[in-house]
Length: 313
Image (cartoon, rainbow, N blue to C red; front, side):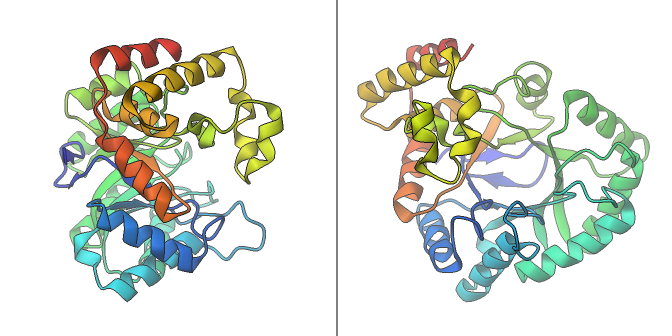
């Protein structure tokens, strides 16, 4: 496969990251093991989670997703052949991205993941109350101790990334090599422009979440009557508008041309975008993993990419 670097870091991955947000929510441990096994069997290595996933489920213990992934790593004994990505400040906690909060959170994540290092540790949400210098200095300690290899940020603007990079240079601290923004055929404003330019220049690697727009780009939600088809249906309502309809129409047309599903075509479009290292996508079954793999391996023509891009503007 077309392996891609994550910014200037030492990490190089295949163009798909498995989203761990469903583990402990719509996927229990047994099914989670099946999904993770299928993912690595397809030749992929990068698994994304967070300290808080899935903290939106009432009564769930903290870090259930990390816990399931940790049990799988222990059972399979394959820690050094996969890349584990996780995040701190997932719930915009009181400690935010302060040094003490990071110091405590990383130990909790390492314990749940049953590992002694994290490949990519990310600031999940910006913390306006903590200076970049304090956060990066805390990460510096973790990198020097071998507990973290590379750092990244999620939901940061281009200006935030630029400010953090400037501090890293001035203070000789580690830099954010990865940005995790929302990006798909519909939601493009967080990436297109300065962020994408940074990625194309090699300054950062982009691993984007919401790659299938909460399932909207699978094509199974085409009216409000469809919203109760799954637990994730509530996140789709805002896409049911003329722009969404135009995107689904374009996806249907291209899907017919390449003998693929709308979801597979939507992923192929992301992989074809300049500067994108990999989309993040979750799966609740082995069949879905196979479909994700087909999507990121699918090569669209320039005309097909342009048709899809135009529909989403």
